[in-house]
Image (cartoon, rainbow, N blue to C red):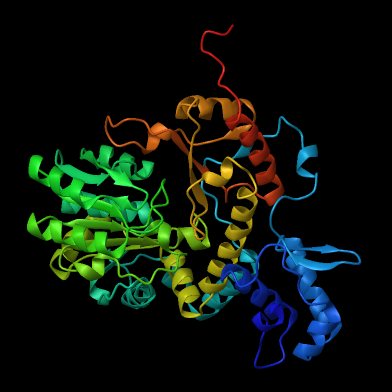
Length: 456
């Protein structure tokens, strides 16, 4: 029963009740359309005032997690909304191309943390410089944080960076050399491609399917080409949302051992995902450089990431940090460390998971958009296109109706064939209403015929 999801050992406040319901949505214990207990009934069961429950429900409705109907009750939001989205102006442009991370109550959280930091530290301690690898206390905190991802690392293995892209640059610039070839998924993160190009590294694509990189294709590539390193995203791969099953993680680790190759494992997109399988870094710790970042949790302005390297290679990866942007910004790392220690990131993760489920529930109501490859923790989907559409034509047509989509060629490695698919960042629009408007436009477009290039 719904009431069983909302349990407390002590008398809760309205914020605790709201957080419990959001957590229930994130864990899929509460589903779209499910009716919540009436105000008076829930107040009686929890031993609180009716006004406390009313305030919690009001907050949830403002955030879009529930909808209230006079005389019917309060329900978990999901599916299509009424006709509000239909009335929005057709000229309004909606961005589904760029990642944006919604973070609840960030103003209060950040304000509280900054007040505490300034009360405890001299300004030079938080605005000064830091060792290239980061402060020892911060490295310990990040090592503890990564244990939840299955990475067991000594703090001395941790190099703190200015975000995930900085960690990628530090790894590529020190583990490989200019002109060398790196094997990666045939579709990969455009920023990784940019870093590799800037560093004069050649990328070669490894065939993949809905479960990620195919080990047999990697083995064949290693036998036919001189590979310097393997770059792989284990969870929520960008753009395809593939998550490698355990047997493939083990197979890739074994291939790397057989050919004596370092592995660069990116976990930037999997930080809000629950995954019980160990990462490749836990399977082959002697050769894996593990990259993670807090930007997908606390927003892109949280430029705090880290690179975990084998102890024998840490000095080299530290040099990669030092010769690029230098050590990570001390104030940002101090904020991140406190949010980890105070468990402030967990509510952000649960909120985002619940919000993402709400948006995926909307997507599932459309015949064509509902076929997109998704993950309950990922704010993007990978949408196969109908036979009549080529990816670049669809991106152009979507732009003409006011929906921005990242060009598919930006994900393609080398000269591989362009897939008939596009990535949609469903977490980017500021509201579900805006996302619904974009969905209405794209669903109509998917069912239409592209305009001939010979039309005048």
